[in-house]
Image (cartoon, rainbow, N blue to C red):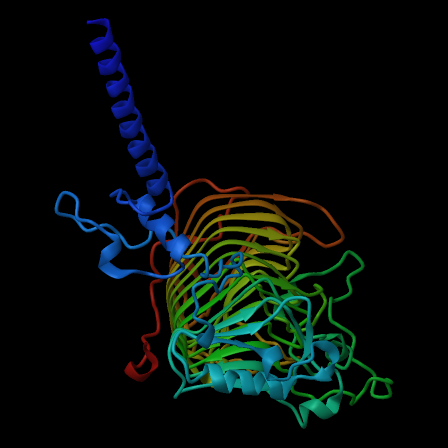
Length: 511
């Protein structure tokens, strides 16, 4: 019995050993990849990494009726994208860097031809991006980035600096604009770069018959001398150095859906940024930087343009921070810091007996700092047309000489002819105009034959600060409307209601 038991135990031990050996070999083989048949996504990725290539459907098994994705993460050979530069999602075939077209960017070599070549290439591709890279200074002469045969939605990515030539030869007998974009659809100029007009050589050479801001006549220093800029002497060493015609730094003409964002324009020869005959304009996070005494250097100038939004920008210049001219409608100016400069103006309009039409203008949430005027409408005698539907609201005036101005006797020359015709002004609204003034809080000088109508004022709080000028009370002439709240100081000159008689414009004079 004991012997049988020993044999039985020995037999069972041998069987168990073979079974164990078989199982051990199976496990080792599986670890070597011969029986790798798991059904998870991780196995698919591991197989791809091991084999280095795809095996099609043999690598996947159906589970629950759903097919598994081929890869759970990009294959190792896929390059990792670099950090964002603002044109991340643009295909490489759509990117045109000016340095790849011969631009040097040393601030001395003329890179105009390289910019022309880069634009010619970008123009042919929809959704393209022309890059002006950072850390370079590009000397560029007068240039036009033109349509109308360019593709749509081109981005001009400005991260470097563009400077203007300062030699007279580069400008010929005079050019109206330096950098110009014309007849484009969906054009965007954006980035963190700078456009530098290097305008001081032009300002010093200003002809002494250049236009002057007519509101200077209202500002009389305590020494009773007019604030007129002295003319440049004919024998000045700078006289004749630059052409008489001064260019606008950046102009858009005849374009749709125009965007300017992020960039800085400084020291323009004349106007910094101009939109002419454009529809759909957005200016955002934009900076203008020029001295307060730089002549005729408007910040943003709109003419014959509609559906414009100008917001969240800082403008320091020698003329109007924002100038809204004839042919403009549906313009919204919001969250602007203005100063130094001449405030935000509509006009001047009607010069040389022309017809001017401006409507639906809103200016709100603006800070004026040490500007000559605050919010202003200026028209010439003899003009026609109308300005209507204007709203100035929530404007902070800090030491502004003339915060609220309507001047229908505007004249930027030494003498102008008296005329009876005038641009008609109506539905002009002021609300929440607060702060301090240094000369006169309100100056409303309207036409005798075409008085201003429906001028409303609400919550006007302006306090005087005596500086170096004679100070005056509010002034109104032929201005009709209504005070909705008491004002400080009292604006008792505003006439309540409608004018008893008013000249009727002929049909051809109306907008």
